[in-house]
Image 1 (tube, one colour):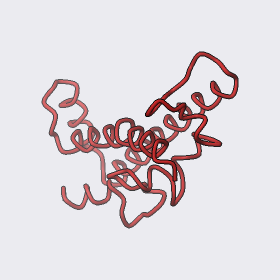
Image 2: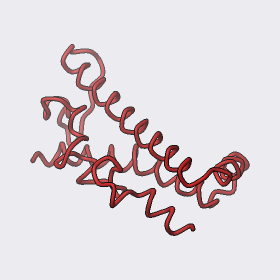
Image 3: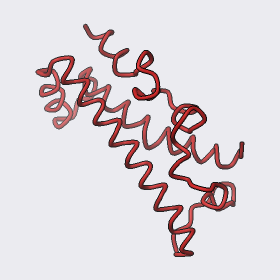
Image 4: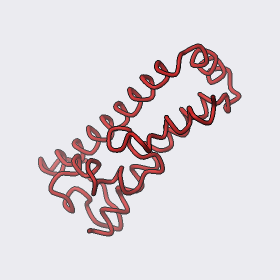
Length: 137
C-alpha cells in the first residue's frame, strides 16, 4: 500500500463521506438546531423505517457517486495534463494510482478501510443506518 495515497483516501472518506453521514444521522435524531435542519428532521420523522432506509441508501449512493466522479475528474485531469493537480505530501495523487476513482470500492478500498460508517452495500449486518434505527425505536 502507498502511505501517501492512503492518507489522501482517508481524508476523502472522512471529509466527504463520513462527515455527511454524521450530518444525516444528526438530522434523523433532531440534533441540529438551525431552522433548515429542524424542518428536515420534522419531515424525516414522518417517514416509516423503510422509507428512512431508502433515503439513507440514496444518500450513500449519492455520496459514493460524487466521490467517484470527483476522483475520476482528478485522474482524468492528470491523464490529460490539465491545470488540475492534487498533491498530498508533495506527491501528485493521480500519479500514485492507476485509477483514483476505483480506490474507494471493495474490500481493500478506502471506504471499507477508513470509514466509521461501513457501506450498506458491503455488509448489510453492519449498516450504519440500521444501527441508528435500532437505537431510535
